[in-house]
Structures are given as C-alpha cells and as structure tokens.
Length: 374
Image (cartoon, rainbow, N blue to C red; front, side):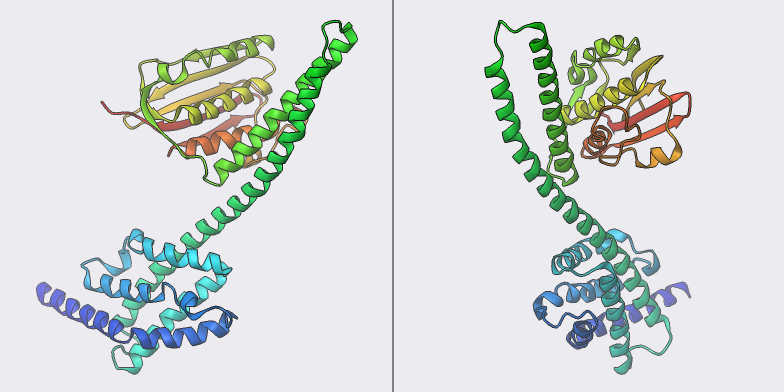
C-alpha cells in the first residue's frame, strides 16, 4: 500500500512540474503586468524586472521531481536562484517589502494560472505543494537580499571613509615633515617638551587613520584572509611579550600561558591584529590587578582567551561593544575601533569572537580559529 501511495504521489508531483513548465510563459507575462504596477516599476526594463523569475519556476519543477520532502527542503537548494534575484533587486533599488510582495504575487499567479487550466483545485495537495516551495524560496530570497543590501551599504560607507582618511594622510605627512625640519639639536627643555607633545599627537592621528581604514576595509569584505598551517610559537614570536612593558608601566601583571607547539590554521596579520587589540583594551581599562592571555584547544578549534580585572561591563554595553565607534568609556583615550577590528579580523578567518563580564570583577574576551589536524 505504501509503495502505491508513493507512486501516486510521484505521479502527481511530476504532473504539477510539467504543468509549471508548460505554462511558465503565461505565468511570467501575467506576473510582469501586476508587478510593474504594484512596484511602480513601469520604467524598469522588462528583462531586468523578470530576471530570475523563470529560474524560480524552473527550480520549483526540479524540486517537485526530486525525492525531497517539500516542507523540509534544504535552504541551500534555493541559494543560487535567490542570490541572483536578490542582487538584481538591490541593484534596481527595490526594498525588502517589494521583494516579498513580488514573490508572493508569483505564488498567487502560479496557482491562479494552474487552476484555470484545471491542473489544481481550489484547495488541495497541489496548491499546498506550491505554497511550501514558495515559502522556502521567499525565505532564501529575503535572507540573500538583506545580506547584499547590508554589504552594499558597508561598501559604500567604506569608500566614503576610505576617501576621507586618504585625504587626511596628506596634511598629516606634511605636518610630520615640517616638525622634523623644525627640530634642532640645540632645543631648550620647553621646546623639547612641545615637540614631544607634537610627536605623540601626530602618532595618535596616524594610528586613528590606520584603524579607521582597516575597520572599513574589513567591514566591506576587502581584506582577504590567507590562513596557513602554523604553530602558536611561529604565529606569535616575541610579539606578545611587548605588552609586558605596557602592563608593567601601569603596575599590572601580564600572565601569558600557551603551548608554542599548538597547531592552528590562521592568517598571521589578522590574528595578531585581533589579539593585539584585545590585549591593548584589557591593559588600557584595567587599573589594578592582572591581565592574562591563555590558549586552549578542543577537537576542532583553538580558543584564545584574554581576561582582565577591570571594572566590568553591563549587559547593554556587551551587546554593542564590537560595533565600530562604540566607546563605553568615553573619558579614556581611544577610537572605539579596536574591538570592531578584532571582530572583523576573526570573522574574516571563519572564527567567532565573544565577550562576558561581571561588574566589579572584570572581563573575559575569547575567539576561536580552526585547528590544524595532523
């Protein structure tokens, strides 16, 4: 009995797939007329407007002929179709509501056309099948649209800030050159003090510009990760020890604990950028006690921990701490970019970064990277 039901189900699905293919042109033509009016897209070329719609119908037919359970169709089966259509809609300037409406309209018109040709009834299994497939397609398309829209916005922002920071480099270089030419060996103590202030200020401006440029490049996905199989000893070298003097100058202990032979797959520049920003933040905001850096590993990942004994962060502060220009301690020096850089540097390598804190006890930041298997 079960095999008979399965055969009947397959026949129905094949008939529905064939009907969709047979009536695709009619469905698309009717859909275009409605969408051009509903989306106020009369001036959009038809080829641009219908781009990807035929692919949705073709993918529906393919899925109907497959052995997949329609209500549990994997999301990735729609990925290529949804990405192409969503990118087109972002380029055309459609908002997500218009995208949702046009795909809902495609579902309705598909059912209407098939009903008129006596392929489906008012309510029945075939209509339910179309609705299930359409829902999966809509979910995938909206997810792709949001990703493309956000990426486009980040890229535009990065271009603007990149232009600004580039323009700032020229007067900064001119000021540094002028300062070096004015400096003489016979300066009196007051003049030396003023030049020291000028040097520190120029250096801080240079760091701010570099941080802003790196943050926006990471935001826009313009920094390519080039991971290699290495060990922690090769990855860090003596770099972390340089933070001891900074910590000691504040009366802090910096405890470092890791096995140099631990294997990891990492991009050295990105990993060091993330770690240095975490250690710099921990030392900057800890006034007494200890800062520690430790590494442990599990079967798949290497986990990097930075702990401190600062005043701590609230739940609200933890929710925004990795966003660019979010400074939870405005009276302290800094750009508010360090943790944003750390997050993007880790995520660019396929890792993840986290934070937790207890008020009055301190903070714990940690990030993960893939482990090299041997």
